[in-house]
Image (cartoon, rainbow, N blue to C red; front, side, top):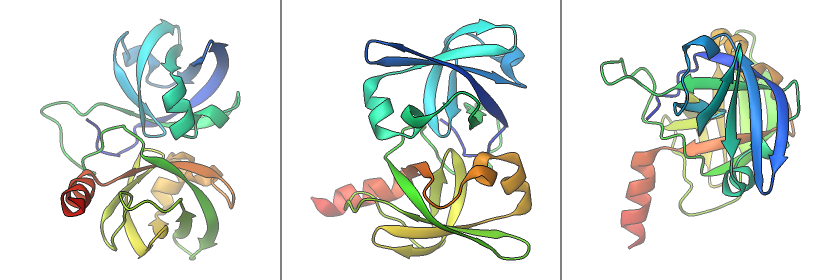
Length: 194
């Protein structure tokens, strides 16, 4: 389980296809703290560390992950948000994040608010994918609060710290991001659907 509080960024060093799988090798400031078989969220996608070599480590994404997330469009040099699993005795600073991306969204606008930024995202309509104003949403692994909510569109506001310490600074109109909707909301939507 994750909280959506990004620890650091990782740079994509290499991408190797093997059948329908893709092996991503990243470098990061926390590689020396990782271990084989550890779960790490990359842009909100929970992946298992399978190899470590110096300051680089490798994870493998299967076809389902590549289809559902933005990882399939990564290029060498791209930067992803990183979060390790929450320790059992750790603070719960964000919200419950599973590392299971529901869908992707496209950024439709970025507005500089002279001290913060408004990002507006649009996603394919699905009755299971809902946002509510002042509810939680995870974008590329970042726990955020929804500002405005519409049936297949929502906005968030980003403070300077988050802008500088995550890959939000590289998101622009047309950028595809990973979304994980609030788990509580997903359970309620499922129950009401019955």
